[in-house]
Image (cartoon, rainbow, N blue to C red; front, top):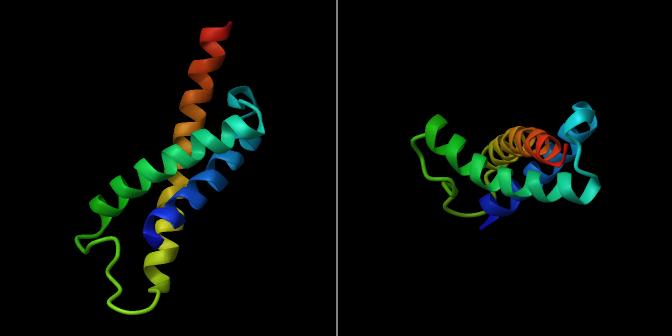
Length: 95
């Protein structure tokens, strides 16, 4: 459960950063946040499965800080990418 939460938080941060960095793909604060959170969840799960062979919740007891940081980073990267791609598509569709 901690993995999903950290991926969503990382994705929201990544989506917000993507909107700030790529101004032409920004969808507003809430749009960037939502696109980033969705991308963080999907991208975080995908990247964690590609990078590690261990399950996402590998800690037997307590919180594994390495896993938490990896989930935040993977979620952030996924959120950044999804926000920029969705933002560019939305700008092109709207004209």
